[in-house]
Length: 79
Picture 1: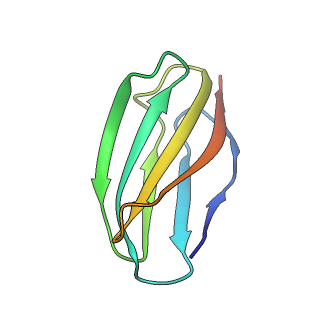
Picture 2: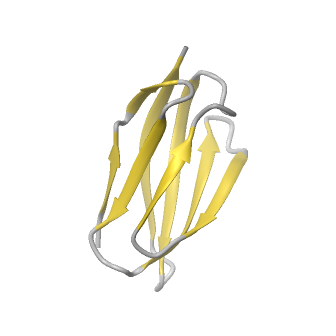
Picture 3: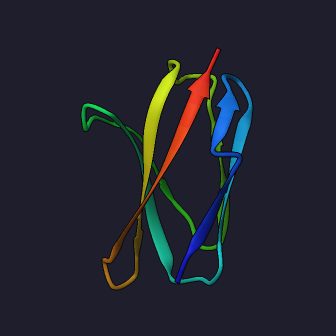
């Protein structure tokens, strides 16, 4: 099980598309560098991250599959 996050470096206000390679994924969370959860999602195959509410900086996307395995990918938001 894996997923793609495109693009991983984005101008604030643009969307990031997250797409899973299968339907095993269930939940996702955007987490800032201090460990605060900014937003959570429930999804099966894909969703978009809207970045207009995020400040510029580095964030992590935590995705959990149906067996509760955690996958983490980093992305950046710029002005």
